[in-house]
Amino acid sequence: MDRYSPPYEITSAMLARVANISEKLGRIGMISGLEARPHLRRNNRIKSIHSSLRIEANSLSLGQVRDVINGHLVVGEQKEIQEVKNAYAAYEKLPEIDPYSLFDLKRLHGIMTKYLIDESGEFRSGEEGVFNGDQCIFMAPPAKLVSPLMTELFSWMVREKETLHPLILSAVFHYEFVFIHPFADGNGRMARLWHTAILSKWKSIFEFIPIESQIEKFQEDYYKAISACHAQGSSSAFIEFMLLQIESVLDELSAQLLDDENTLSECTKRLLEAMEYNIPYTATALMKKLGLKSRDTLRKNYLTPAIELHAVEMTIPDKPNSRNQRYIKR
Image (cartoon, rainbow, N blue to C red; front, side, top):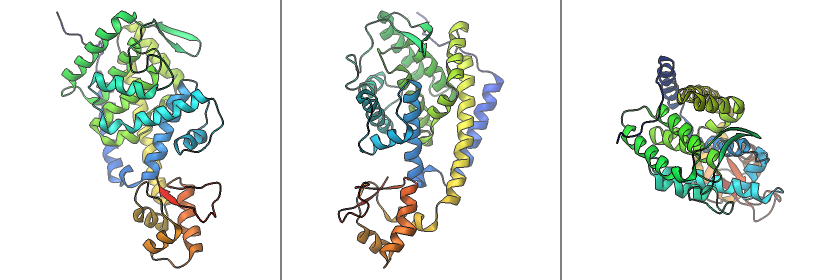
């Protein structure tokens, strides 16, 4: 029996975009990238989660998603709040997983849909369709074919990962995954998460590049590309769409990094360099680390700007002057 290979065609336009993306990644690396900017990494992670959920009709705002992730009380539908918690937990697992492992895919689906569906972490037993709002784009393959189709898809990825460029392989996977629609719920979220997972194994910076936000901006085009691929029996249109969105989001990231370079004051940079991640500090401890004598100077020149950038947060935000207040680098 011939081994299955998803149908697609690599065009000269695709190769040109792959070259452009690689060049832009190199430029971003020269700007002292995201590794030195924990606040940007966290902000982009939150944007990714908010956009991916919003595509699936989650109504929470970006600020509410941020508050849920930061452990603050949010008034909203419990299901939507749980979706945020689950998505954040799943994205946090990215460095640990193997994107070419079907076992890891099912494990992260279990995290993504925890408490939300009965078949969490398991392939669907019923029939499903791909919808854009109320419009059905196409019906997915029968449930009995899901397991063999997913096994074939992952076998293909393992065979091709050393020869096919990750930018193209990840897009082919994304479309094929959406076409198979292997789970009862969470397919869109998992397709976008796994696209990021594949790319982040190639270049770790992709773990914090909000591709999902770009897809949300062009959501209609996203579904049009999927529909076109289904009609043509090839994922070429979707590959072209995703390469365009990745190139665009890298342009935005470059501008964001340059703007951040100019926005971060020397005081804020010193503060972030002095603090360890997720360690609560008193104002007194921070003054000692920074060699400051004035609490007012610490607050005005260091803490307030860092808090406004979401690079540092208070443990008791509702009582900023509490004697038990601590500050945490995020």
